[in-house]
Image (cartoon, rainbow over all chains, first blue to last red; front, side, top):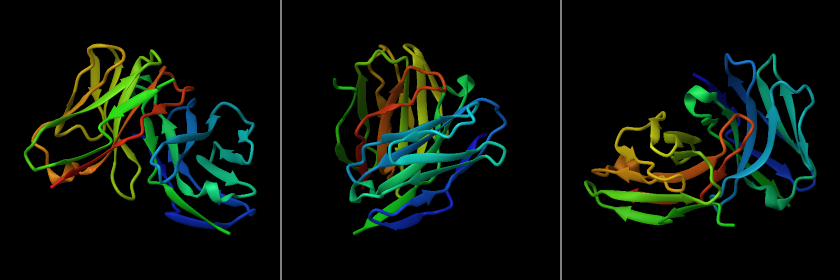
Length: 116
Length: 113
């Protein structure tokens, strides 16, 4: 079974600073996708960024980027120039294969606080 | 441009009551999912469906049932509600395949008292 571990229950960052959220996962598959989702107090699940395992290049979406280390099974999220609107729960997720209906497996989440 | 619509948004049930959480999507997605989110936890898969007429259990299916008679609808049935089913429930859909992300509904907060 695939597992996703987020070891930081809470993180804090000052506005305009950079913060990195950690995620490790366990899988025996060679090709897969990884995702970061943001959940603000509104409860809505918002896709932040995704990474294809067979791609060496780290994904980037504006202020959000990942550090993907396939051998170490590590997938961290870096948020640059943090804004108050970035405050939310962040979930790392791994997508399973066709035998499990391409289900997303989530970590427990990291609560990000952004201070002025 | 509705995406995934869940109803109701909030509900309080008494122990032993039953209810159906509704989920509908208008994107012609084959894959649909039900997750629950307990406080301080990530989302756990309850059931999923890969197309009309096909459903399968996820990680935490006990106490729930689903059906998928159409591509658009994927209702989740709670029979004999228990306090352990107090949670936030999310429905999601996808085209399927590892490269596609999900479209999530806005969630249903259910309290069983």
